[in-house]
Image (cartoon, rainbow, N blue to C red; front, side, top):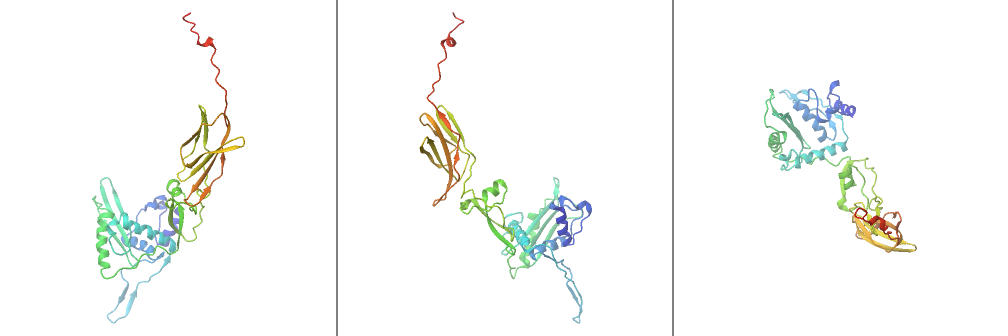
Length: 336
């Protein structure tokens, strides 16, 4: 919510005017924005495990006699949890590896990055890249005070400069890896539910591995509904029709399921189909009254997991024949 957003911004010394308190904050929409130093300060919170401490251009002043007459006061404020920082770090590391900051991907150490470009159809006016390691946070801006249009972008021009800066900063050592684990857990979810229905559901224990996805979540937030669609298959009720003495049973698409279809007449039951999903199963029994049942099941190659049996409406195939039309109907009255 906007109120929560304001709470976090306030904790990092960002004050909002009343007309800035709206949903455009999600895209960084602010009236005055931040200076480049302020921008670097805010991103450094993720490298610091959620602790915000503004940087200083002057750390300390020492006289020629060795007396310290000024030392910058560092006040830390805990803004985000370690878990939140780990998740953000993970996301921004991917930005460097394969996203808009991929010009930095060949660096031999962890770099988390966020790029940004401001402009319109006539060209760009501002380009940014903010990158951080476990030791430093660096911000690069390209633009000018007159807002002249150009082809600059954060992912291209700013990243080229950033790469040179980081290579120089770490020419003699490598920073430690950026933390992406603290305060997090992993859960295995149903890939299909996530990709098709935007739902986070814990995967069925017997779910095929290809249909699972391992994701990272905040520790303590692992509780989600669990799927049972493989250990206890459920399908929509199939449709049954009769035409020209042929019974047709239509099954809704079920990628991983197989089906047993039985036909019962009096006390006799016959399995007419046992196999993978097909759109339509047909049967041509003798005349009589029949009840068909459908049982979905999942076969993992070792075990079969059966769903509930579905009983379809009874069908009646009788010996009745169509009575011929009387001769009077076929008589040609106009030519007589």
